[in-house]
Length: 161
Image 1 (cartoon, rainbow, N blue to C red):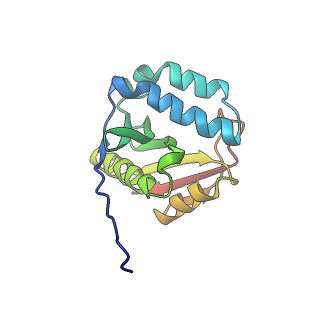
Image 2 (tube, rainbow, N blue to C red):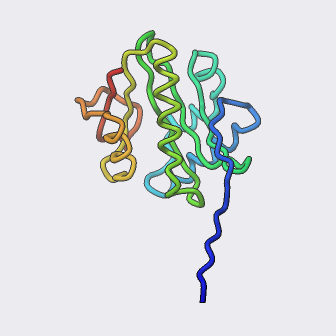
Image 3 (cartoon, one colour):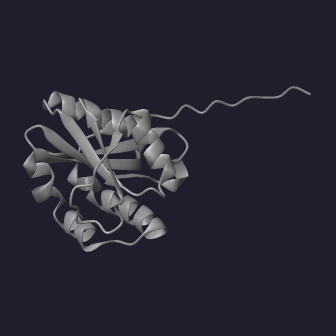
């Protein structure tokens, strides 16, 4: 008996912010927040002011599309002229394991470099091992925690560009 192998070609694409996908950004982020923690007031503030607080302040939100379906997202929030915060990275459970977070991370790093940033920082939590492994893979290193609006944050990391 011969084994047949099937290869499914999927179209994977990273795109910048489009208001059409705002609810996908919120839904994906609420899903992981509710699974591991809870939605904090600062999260709600971000969700309610995406365009004003991120896009209009020279930040960006990237979306990963798999066959034209939103599979993941991440925000780059401008902190100052030389620094961006990487925030709100989420990949739909149906698409986890496909290394989509790598594509999102690469889009963030490219974006920061194109905007002459010198540093990207993020805050996270030590229980999110796959996320911490991703950050380490891209040479983020742990640094002392700055003051943060997030109760769940117990680690800060940064990447010098």
